[in-house]
Image 1: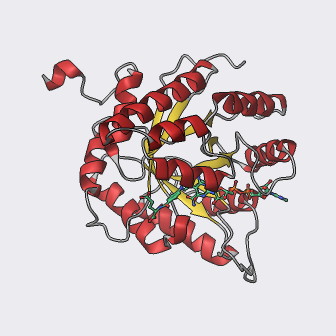
Image 2 (image 1 turned 135 degrees about the horizontal axis):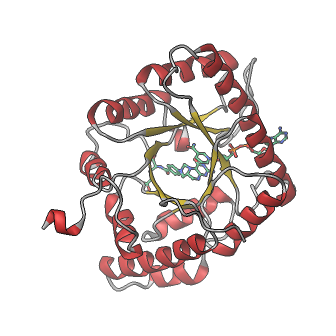
Image 3 (image 1 turned 180 degrees about the vertical axis):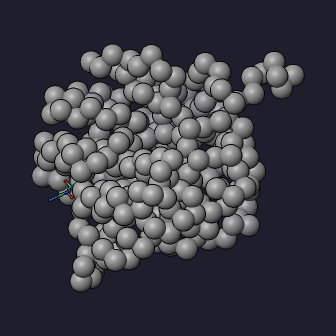
Amino acid sequence: MPTPSTNRLALSYELFPPRSMAAGNLWTTIRELESTAPDYVSVTYGANGGNHDTALTLLSELVGRTTLRPLAHLTCVGGTRNSLRRTVTDLLDLGVRGVLALRGDIPDGYVPPDGAVDHAVDLIELIRDVERGNAAQLAAGRIAVGAAAYPTRHPESATWQQDIEVLAAKQAAGADFAITQVFFDASRYAALVRRARDAGVTIPIIPGILPMTSLRRVRTLARLAGIDPPARLCRRLAHAGSEADARRIGVDATVGLLRAALDVGAPGLHLYTFNQHSSALAVLDALNLPARNGAPTESEIA
Ligand SMILES: NC(=O)C1=CN([C@@H]2O[C@H](COP(=O)(O)OP(=O)(O)OC[C@H]3O[C@@H](n4cnc5c(N)ncnc54)[C@H](O)[C@@H]3O)[C@@H](O)[C@H]2O)C=CC1
Ligand SMILES: Nc1nc(=O)c2c([nH]1)NC[C@@H]1CN(c3ccc(C(=O)N[C@@H](CCC(=O)O)C(=O)O)cc3)CN21
């Protein structure tokens, strides 16, 4: 087992770009998340048909109007070397200094364009190449490049060994850290970390955690990860007597999963918020982590 780090835990959240920045309670969510002083907030890209422009708009608002540091997801599926180079340059121009390099989900009937970038590893190399070309502008800091890692086998991979080889290749291509796909069983996360370390992967592998308070989202994410949803939890969420009951059941289950991941040495936590702060903050509250720099403590609020 890896030894737990003595550094404080990393904390990050994931948002998806809404169709409109005026959507629902987006700004309430952003401000609530900001009050916990996370290390960064990631913005998905191309997920579920979401597009380039809405992601760049949300990133630019985060840079311009908040103290949050954004991590831009970038998917290479559908793009070309030229369009992706342009997007990375646009992100740098916005002030973004962190990119999660992904391939992305392949749409039905997809035909790769000329000049396609096929795999996340190729995208990482492309980002590092753009970085070299902008070394003068980046004098005060490099791009932090992240990649996805899989506690349960990627549905398109033949074996888990393939996933580990790909993760090692992502590190070799220049990935600084990895965030995991959603998982519901901490032993899968522990096995991923152990196998990755055995294969020479030294970068941090941050668990990506869904606050499991919504049966619908648990099922959606399980489908995206290509795994079975956790049957017992789904039964309990389905039979919850009220929203508050479902919240309690989901928060308890999520805290259990997170504690187990932290117990095997997870260096932090990345919460898939789905643009809702309440479940994410309820999970954090129940986890009772040590106070963070910048986050007001109870006594400061009182
Ligand atoms: N849109 C978003 O914001 C997010 C998307 N994702 C999802 O993660 C999944 C895939 O993304 P990545 O892990 O970044 O893709 P990837 O390119 O690393 O891997 C995708 C598949 O291709 C295989 N593969 C990778 N490199 C290969 C190579 N050089 N030769 C042959 N096979 C290779 C992998 O084993 C895997 O089965 C997608 O389902 C994506 O949508 C995950 C998080 C966020
Ligand atoms: N295969 C896969 N693809 C992804 O895009 C992905 C993962 N896995 N795993 C982790 C996160 C989760 N992501 C997602 C997943 C679903 C939506 C989505 O369905 N968004 C809807 C709103 C859904 C809701 O409010 O519950 C949308 O309208 O954009 C967004 C991001 C991005 N990531």
